[in-house]
Amino acid sequence: MAQQHITEWGVALDCGAHIGECTQQYALRFQQVIAVEPNPTWHTCWHLNCDDLPNVELHTTALGHREGRMRRDTATAQVLEVDDGGEMQMHTLDSWQLTELDFIKIDVDGSEARLLEGACETIRRLQPVIQIEIKTNRRPQVRQQTLTWLRELGYEPQARVRSDWIYTPQGYPNGLG
Image (cartoon, rainbow, N blue to C red; front, side, top):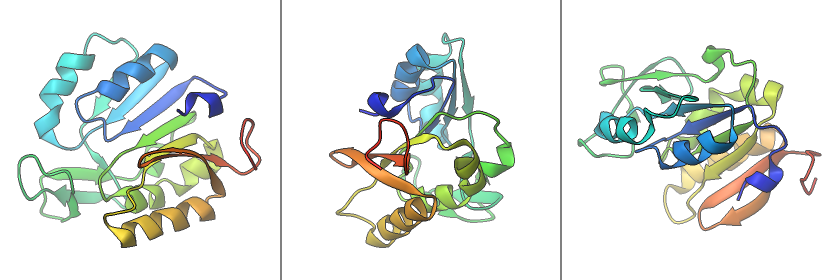
């Protein structure tokens, strides 16, 4: 869905990499894929699916609005909460100081606004195409915060399939703006 809006195929960021299905797809097109999956439940499957791909790397951390930690309620919980005593590290995308980023997939089950808040400098500087899951029937406050961050970053929607949206910077090639 996002391919028609992507003009550069250098670096993709797969936030919420889960078991690596999207990572595998991105590895076929992008020179480098950075996968991010904080939930240890999925790490073994991701490695089985992606370890043979030479252009991918997995970060077993969460991306959020600050440096800190997160926790989950159960072993398979998808929704993570900020908790300084939690078992998972949380970093901001801005702290990674990326020099190239062409595409971000964000499927982080309730942490979308926090991720965008900690990625503002990177997104403004590198202006990647963003594919983001925004569910309309759950977490209305997170949905509203996410849409606010996307607007503040100068992004506008281009396409939607179910709960996945494609956003590009205003005036972006192949965009509507």
